[in-house]
Length: 388
Image (cartoon, rainbow, N blue to C red; front, side, top):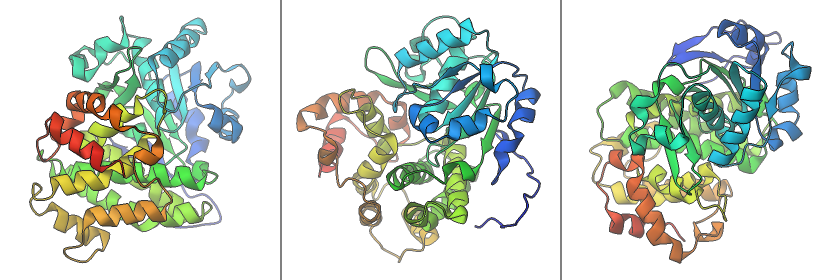
């Protein structure tokens, strides 16, 4: 559960699982060699203004020989949009790039995947969305992506999906094993300066991935084992990482929990994400995905009670909770300690939005793998319960 500390960097041995992963403090120093290994000579850097302002993007770019002339897209929104993807794609094509390096959180990594897709595939993003039948159209021709996470939440560096809000307002997923980045460089040192509220929100995103994957009804014991380990790490370390952002051991374990969450959610998620995806597409609110997952999770756990066999008992055991402990209350209390919002109302969501949100949630691909079947009325009830 811990990582050894030493005065000099130890060799970093790659984890080969879904993709090639370099994971440890100082892993970023291997970026130039890994870019060469996957055939990227002229990358497009995809990042966001916050990562640039924090100096992290510059720190990463300095490692590359072409840093002074490297094309870059720094305007990734907190919820990636089709408009932003097309702007980045225009730079990619104009500068004759041959791959993408994403430095940032899940938004930058998802946007990078969408750019890599459209750089090598004809048509529009909607043509490739899973909910619209586009998954089989995504081929191995996707341009190479190297993902460098600067948060510990989405795990998009090892994920096969990318969520993008289309021009018509629908937030849908691109899903394909061909979208998994060719390299994931996971350096916990890049998260040391992350503010407490983002540490908490992204950490709860990782927790939600692990919990939802574990209770998904699909049969995949290996994924469930990874999910339990990730949930245990997140429960043990999230508060330490939030309170003391410089705790290297906590940062290491939260980045591992984040990566594990994405490794395992190939098994499928559920209503937590079925709700957070349409909520994240509400343009006037621009809500953070991880925060949304944290806020709606207690209501979803209550809804699924009695439909997961012995999984709640097994989850309690791994989290070190007493037998019979109310999991929904445990997570609501954890949210409060992390100073996350108490409900959707506090985040600006209005009751009048619920019918449209429920319609969108019913169409979300995550709804199919919730342990308990849902209809629109059930979703409306969940949204109302999560309001307070």
